[in-house]
Image (cartoon, rainbow, N blue to C red; front, top):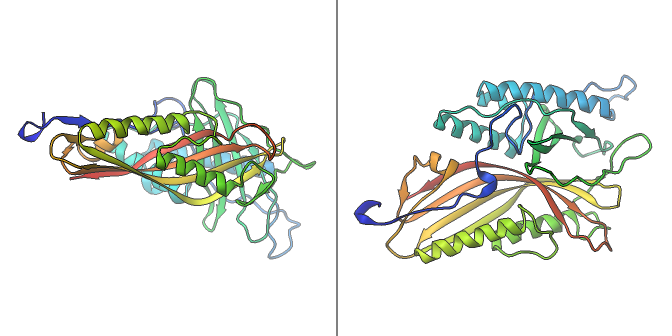
Length: 337
């Protein structure tokens, strides 16, 4: 019972936001990293023209990234993480370290085994990037997106499937030299442009409505049903639930061998619970509870998460549905009154 005898309503924690299981590998949903420095340019590159990053160079970049980030995670060194990650990814990892400190725990750290890299050809005016995919049976399949920033190579997106048997990623198309094809966010020839599919996915989550364009799964239909159940439970106790999912950062896409696309994208989500009548108190769970010192709230409570996804978009004319094939989620902040 809470103050004045009010019942305390424990909120449900979003499944993907639960603390990862510690082990040899890093936290499911992100890579376990090492120092990321820029790959050396080809000696034959013309002055002022950036040389094409080769798959071998990309593999070395990712290996250094894994080793450096893993060391920074093991040391719980939030400042050092900035040498290996950028943008929302950096914010998420630093927030995870802070939550772990408040729990008196360590964040998982380690190396993902045998990553395979896919490198799109360099496009003038656009930052170079590549994808590294690794699968550790019984732990997760993870895909890391690395981008060349002004400060060097950094992780900018990551997504994992922690199910016992992850659904295989569609084959990525490569040319005769082994390079992948990068697609714009408005690329056509697909069941929807990457921009349209990203917006549709986030709108479905925000509106708690299943979208028939998407195959059912943990990050689509199951997530919608989870939020609906939470909304109904709160409403019975006199509380209202509202959700916000806002895309953040660039949409990155690679052509698949069947003419479809694999797309990586990120969002910042906030779930807000607001009391509509006096009565039950609300207490958050999991990392959100840690950040609010396990307090109960009478007026409102909210939690904000960083979320990253990878999705497969089938080619135009296909009867197949869009599949969201991985996620990385970390709590950024929580509050209430």
